[in-house]
Length: 155
Image 1: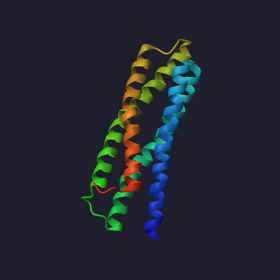
Image 2: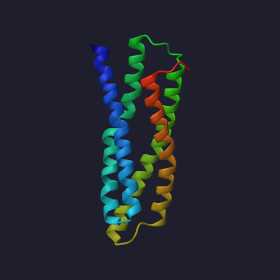
Image 3: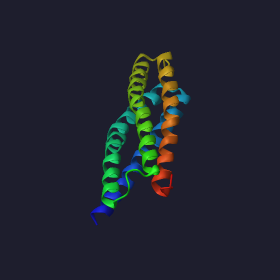
Image 4: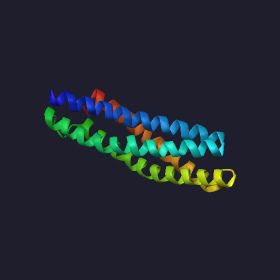
């Protein structure tokens, strides 16, 4: 029973992690491209909050619960799918950490531009480009981890 509860929490947590990441990225991307400074400022505030509430907590919980499940189920630690999952997860998190910093910067720049009645400054767009560049490999890494977790192919 304990294994099933942790497994359910692990799946729920991964869904929150991926869903929050996709949702916040979509909304920040769309509003940024729309260029309405007031809307960007509001959405960026909520993106930062969502990242701290959902993404940060699940980023920590995922490996803890995953390693516990591997141990509890007696799975071999040297399984190829597990190694690749850990590597891809580490890649995704390594991309996500600077994204959090970029989102805070983008939020602050948008809030300041809105307060000043100015358009989004060039610094916003530099941060935005880096945010997109880091988001793409993180997205595909998480998709690959989902695949590996579900299929557990013999690698």
